[in-house]
Length: 216
Image 1 (tube, rainbow, N blue to C red):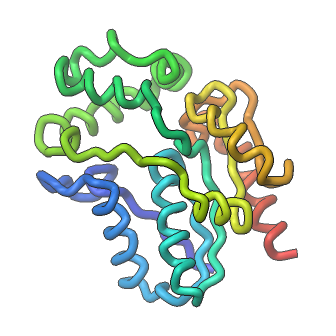
Image 2: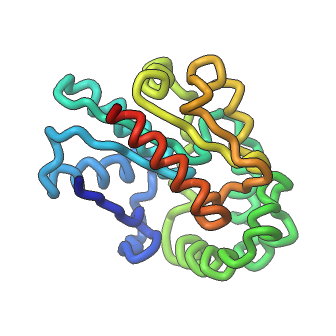
């Protein structure tokens, strides 16, 4: 089948508008993109990492309301818990100290990003500097809120989840463990948040197993 990979607004090769970074705006971007490529009534397998995973889950639930599609979802290290104080502290620090002082104030659960995954550091800082200095990103970034019962039901019925054992997102594991069989819920030992860069082969093996399982 066809594969569509896109960059969120303000990321990668996408444009960086001065405003429009609420979660709802990102959800609308994806909705319009799906319509533009002609997949509105097609069944889609969403694969998302981090914020993209949370966005994919919201998109899946929105589309389920149509009762016209049979989508599936794969979440890679998704931030599914509320009151994520580390993330909130990070954004508050960025507002006051700016990007240059970030390294001295980084939350402990995100420190792995700078130690074991340092190759991403330069690119990440460049992107964040642009978002912080040129847009309203910090003022618009939303707390994602509680994972709703509908979303949990969607994961249970239509999803699989992969975590890194050293990522702050692993705190969501107890939430999902009672819902998913071990074949659809996996933890990569010593894995951080950026699993796709840290251990791409392991992630791809997990993805392949899920895709094959869904077609058996």
